[in-house]
Length: 99
Image (tube, rainbow, N blue to C red; front, side):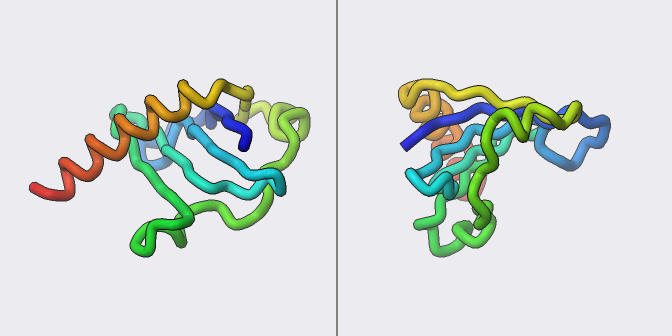
């Protein structure tokens, strides 16, 4: 597995401003966390029956291709960074859903 943090530079309030991704050897997204402009973290997993359909189904392009777009930026990160964000997003999101 590889792990990435990506940024989407835009001015709207409804789309994510950052992503954390876990991708497999085929560069398919396994798990993803969206970071919304208000700081909300939204977790997605391809194994989640309710939210799995929201995970990107096309392979992640190479970083050089993504970074050639002036509105996007992506860097590889360590697994422990991804796991911390993943756990925080799951506890926050699942806690909000239970209310």
